[in-house]
Length: 226
Image (cartoon, rainbow, N blue to C red; front, side, top):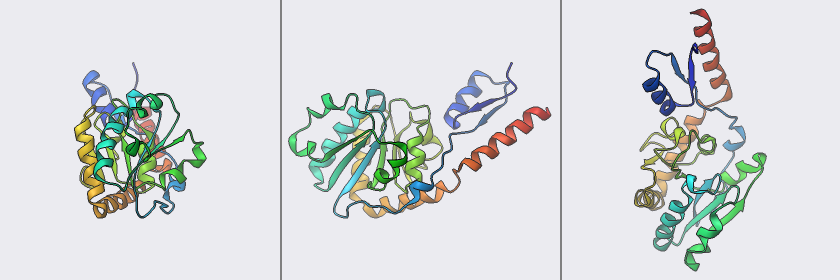
């Protein structure tokens, strides 16, 4: 009996349209203030740091990320992995890493929202290998920080914020080999990684709270006028 459905991104919009073909459906993703993330990078020049930010649980694909990073780290001594988020399951996974790989994984733990930007600035690329994520606001933040993106097709935000081969790579969920290949590709071509990062920064200009409010305003006008 709803007048309209506001879907969080195009992936959700497509699902609602299949379920409710006679209903008005509009895509209104999550928007957030990215001003703090637009600051300068502080990534170390002799490192290539992949950043994961989120709950360290199986749903987020942390086990797949660690397995992929182990392969990347063996081939590239400059590879580092920065894990930011609430600690839950990573300890049991880290014990299986060989010592040389484990030394290049940094556990930052939970960080207050007003401190997150500084951690994003330390990265060269952002990775979200979730098995399921309805949206994933951390992808907005990575966009604002000017990072190339690697996300699975199970991440809602990856269907709106990630343009394949322009600012990142979208891979199959639950696929260690695909994630490994994507990470190897970025670290082997840092110039393309920087170029994709600049594309992310440019796209972030259209993902302001004001843009989201404008979409809500249009939808409300349309539904109340009918």
